[in-house]
Length: 116
Image (cartoon, rainbow, N blue to C red; front, side, top):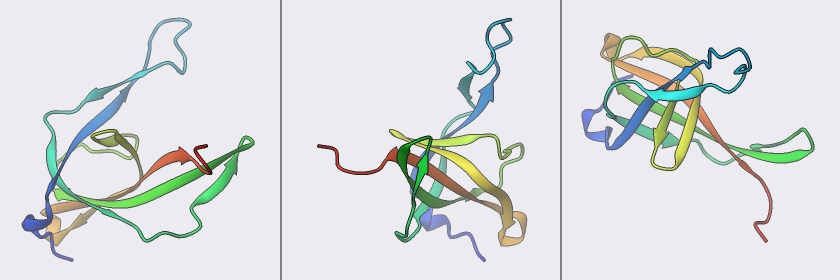
């Protein structure tokens, strides 16, 4: 699988979680940017039954594949942000193109159903 530089047409910000170290801060961490935004290819997966019930709320997932040039230090607990779209990493990184690139599977979430 080759990484096509011409398809790296989206700017994404890589973010990592930062834990709140306060005594009562458990679960209230923040996200911080890792370097500057990078060029990437973001390819949405074809629609399927991407809805599920989570705690009584119908949740829709939007899976996508993200490819970028190789960058050390990206771990599965990080996420990508592209405009208003926040995409937690659900699989990867996998090296592609002989180690010159990385590929990830990501998902962003929304409540499913009518907005009315």
